[in-house]
Image (cartoon, rainbow, N blue to C red; front, side, top):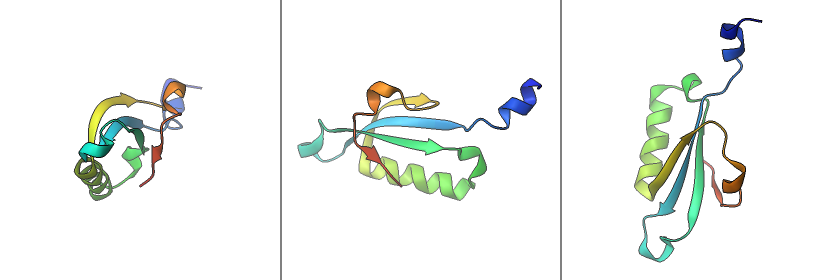
Length: 78
């Protein structure tokens, strides 16, 4: 199997550690994930980011699957 054929099965994912923008919830971390963004339209991805950045402040960004140590945080579903 060639390297090009294995890449077609990989999902392109980004994860974000975020906190609420409201002061009372600044210490509650949450995890958001954008999965397989290359198969989504530009409008879908733009809406997702717009919603995320309006409601939350991003603390950290990573690429790939969510690390196991972050799975204890609440997950944001869009």
